[in-house]
Figure 1 (cartoon, rainbow, N blue to C red):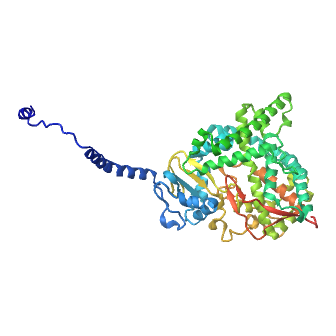
Figure 2: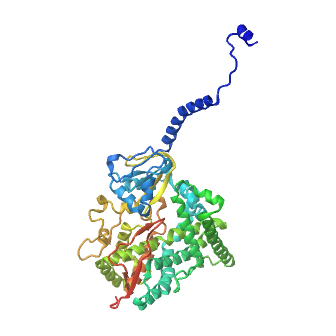
Figure 3: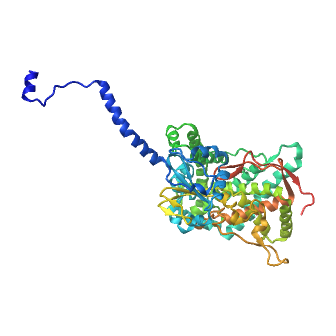
Length: 534
C-alpha cells in the first residue's frame, strides 16, 4: 500500500518520528542563537549610559554592567559623605555621575551654578521625587518635608506665618530660655560638680534632647520633657527616633523598593517600623485632638495658641491626618539639625581657644542688651562662628531632588527624566576655588569684615547656592532665623558659665550620616565651671 501511494504521489514521504535527542539539539541550537542577543539587550538596559569623562578624576569608581559602582559604594558606605565629597571636589565641573545597580544613575554635584539651577532657576523640574516620598511615606505621610506641588504650596503658605518676627521673639524669650534655664543649665551644673566621680556627659545626647523638647513645643505646643535630670527614655521621643532610623534604612537596600516585600509579609525591620510609626502617630493624634478641644473650648483666645499646630487648626485645616503629617514633618526637620550644628560647633571651639575667647568677649559686651532677642541679634562673631562650623559640618550633608523631565545642567551634564540629583553641602564647603586654600581651617573671620580698625565686625554672608546649608530658592528653610537664635542663646548661656572639654582631646570624632550628620558614639565631655565668669 505504501509503495502504491508513493507511486501515485512520489512527493509524499512516510512519517518517521524524529528521535528526542534531535529535538533537544534543535532547541539548543535555537536557544543559543536567541539567548546571547537577549543577554546583550539586558546588559545594555541595565548598564548606565552616562559616564563622567575618565580623565576628569582618578577617584571616580569603576562601573560594571548591572552592578554599576555598587561594590565601591558598599565599601565606602560607612564614610559615604566624605568619599563622595572627595570625588566631587576632584572634578573640574564639581559634578559626576554615580552609577548604581540595575542601571540607575545618580548625579552628585558641589557646583553652585548647578545648585541654583535645580533649587531656583528650574525649580519646577526638580522635586522630592517618588523614591524619596515613598521611602518616607509611612512615617511622614504628606507633610511639608515629604510633599510636592499643590500640597507643599498649601502647607508652606500656612507655615510661613509661624516664622515672623513676633513668633521668633516669643520663641526665644519663652520656649528656648525656659528650656535653657530650667533644664540645660542645671544638668550641666550637676555634671560640673560631679567632676571626675561621674562618667563623661554625652553632650550630643544632651543637645539632641534639648532640641527635641524645643521643636515639640513650637510644633505641637507639647512638652515631652526629654531633657529632664534623669534623662528619661521618653515614649514619644524613642518611638520617633526608631521610626526615623528604620525609614532611613529603606534608602540603603540593594534592590530599590525591595523593602516592600518585607512590608507585605510584615517581617523584620518593616514590622518594627510599622510598630514605631503606629506609636508616633497614635501619640501625635492624641495631642492633635487635645489641641482641637482646647481651641473649641476657647474660640476667642486664639492668641494664646502660638504653636504651629494651633496655627494650622485655626486656619481652617482641621483634618486630623493632614495636620498630624505636617507637624511630624516639622519635628523631623528641626529636631536633629540644630543639635547636630551645635555638637560640631562645641567640638571645633574646643580646638580653637582664640575663637572661644573672641566669643566670650562678645557675650560680655552683650550682657547689657534690653532683651534676649536683641542680645542674640547683635552676636555677629558668634553668628560667623556658627556659619563656619556648618560650612565644615553641615547638619544635612547631602540632599537630593528628582528630575521630572530631561534637562541639561549649567555645567553641561545631561539629566534624564527620573534621575536623582544630590547636591552636596559638605563637599561645597571644601571647594578651594570658593573658600581658598585655607578651607580646612576653622576661621570665622572669613565671614566678617571691618570697614576701619575702630569699627565693629560686619557679617558678610554667602549666597545660598554657594552655601546651601538651609537649602535655597522657594524651599529655603523657614526656620533658619529661628535656628540661629536658638543656637546663639545656647552658646551664650553655656559659655558664660562653663567650659566644654572633650574627653578624647586631640582626636577627631567619627562622622556618621543618615538624614543628618552625627558623631559616632556621641560626644563625651567634661563640664568645667568657668571660675572667672564674664
